[in-house]
Image 1 (tube, rainbow, N blue to C red):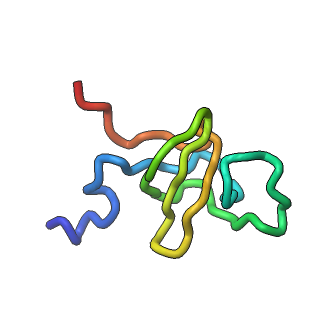
Image 2: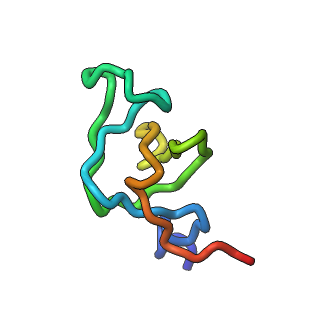
Length: 79
């Protein structure tokens, strides 16, 4: 059943709320040519965070930084 749900089985699963460009570094100073696009509604996993940024992975080869407000968790945080 783990394979049937794909990325959804992971507690770090998030959904992109808007079309966004993934930045290779957690800064707005990265030139647009060095970013890669990701579509709204894509299920991603968070890897780490830095200030107001989250590093996300769309798949193994598509990893980058976005503002934390661009993603929403799918599951509540464990208490």
